[in-house]
Amino acid sequence: MQKAKPLGWGRFIAQFITVMLAYIAGSVPSVMIWGMSSTGLALSTVGSSLAGIGAAWLWLRRDGTVNDAFALTAPRSWRQAWAIGAVAALLILVWFQFASALLERLGAPPLDTALVLDQVTSGPGALVLWIVAVAWFAAGFGEEVLWRGFLMDRLLRLKGLAGRIWPVILLQALVFAVPHAWQSWSGIVVTGAVGVLFGWLRTRTEWNLWPLIIAHAAVDTASMLLAYASKHGLFGF
View 1 (tube, rainbow, N blue to C red):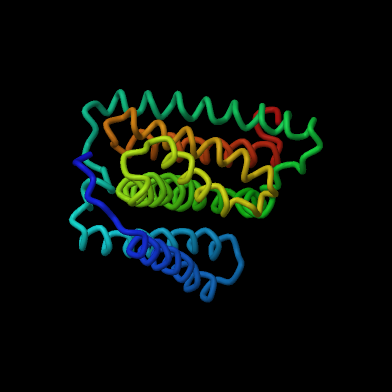
View 2 (tube, rainbow, N blue to C red):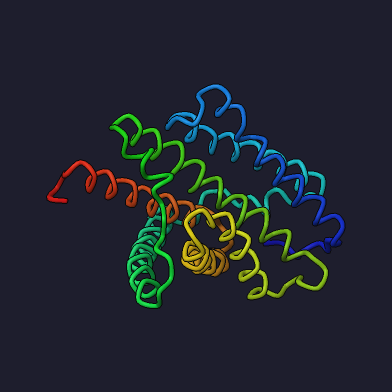
């Protein structure tokens, strides 16, 4: 990453709000066409990602920082990128199991992912759609480009935070976790920890986003496949 250009709070707030508004607005057309069906909900996440990334790109282009934030050039080694992604995905899946058990013992509400997994497991076509459109594009690619890409870049340039890696990592993880409140507040805790891992990981991969995209998409793909297998009694589930 090149030396950060300072970013004022007013400009940052304007950028963040417009990107979030675009992200929300992007979800509407698909739901209006297909309703709250599996197809409508899956494609709404695609619309959100496209709109949010588009708005973020326009701001970054004005500031001349597209390449720094959207670090999507080929990694030095694709084999290494896939290896890092695979290890990170495995750690996250283990963390999900450990954290869920720990929070349950502490009396916290369980993670409630039924809103999504009911749609994912409704049939083989839905499963494929959700893996491709949501796990790999909207979540894996879209969320990493927006949160670890756009947001981390903006925070690292923000007056008062510029160059302070760990405050930036923790803040972006919080912003990443809050939208997962639909899973109960346990979802915020569990997802927040994942956001910290992803934020730290970006600093260890020459700021390249591909290992993070691979890890994020792999976690969501595995979760969807396991849920589908469990619901339909496949592979002994």
